[in-house]
Image 1 (cartoon, each protein chain N blue to C red):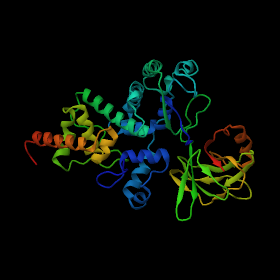
Image 2 (tube, rainbow over the protein chains, first blue to last red):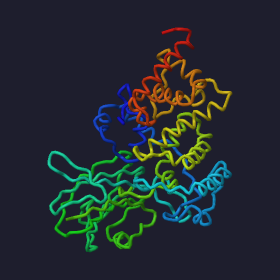
Image 3 (tube, helix red, strand yellow):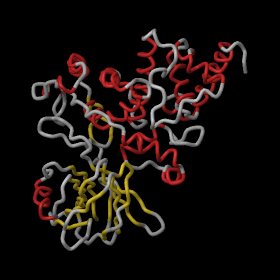
Image 4 (cartoon, each protein chain N blue to C red):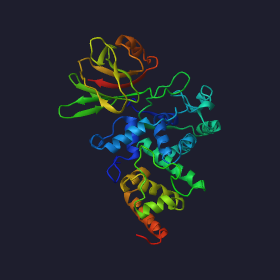
Length: 248
Length: 165
């Protein structure tokens, strides 16, 4: 499906895809040249949408809908019609829906009370620099020693960003920003994924290579977060996104 | 936003695409109604999950389903005559145009009287400005089928307008 309307502007659906994924093939050149669509994208990103109430089922991944019901009662304060969520719950239990299809997983953090943290999200894209072109890498893709990797990051709100790598030996290293002080960098909102000015080159350690973007409302240092990342937890009030590559 | 495949449950659909669905709903409904409609759409998503064939992004499937649900809901609200008469333009969409007789007739009254499939095709064509091929892809039918249905819609519009070309 093309991202364009018959009149040459981007479709509403394409704008939604851009806001969800931060990038959409074939749209970069149009956005650069079309102020109308840039304004539309900014308007779509800026519109004040309510925090989505949490669906009262399947909050914890891997639990069947029925199993998570008790842990996640409906939240009347968040919904206009609480009865509707109850109907949803019943329907969900009856349907027992778990579609076995491949999709990107959720990038929005959920706090311990089950309420999504509005706007606190980050999306990381990794690209392999191949001279005159770059190739987007997704989790599971293979890389080699010497590969030069660049990053694009999308964040709905202003905040502080850092990208950290973890190799197969659980050694951590700073990917971005590469300042000697190990401090995060303040970034403005970027509804469309934005290219970062620094890249990294892969060493020869084979195995799984985790690249993790950490996005926090407050400034932080490398030493503040690496321990939690190694433990597989998310620093408090922060959002993370991760791409895991396989180095041969 | 991990890129690795994961099992898709409705909760994941909702978390990932809920805002896009809500934006689509706001194309048809004012803010104060949109959250109710959002809930209804995800009930439908559960009920009709089996219709997702996996050959297109889930957002496309939800987008079509949301459009159809909004149209059905609007058609049930018999007080409405003009599609979008209470919402008007939203800042992330291009302004509604009535610059052809067909568009004017469709958006005015015809959308409420033709069958639901044709109403949805008309919305994607006249309101969203999508190409026939893209509408076909969104709805899982051939572009030729969409072409034929739009021809039929154009004829209905001309008839409704009293033969005005």
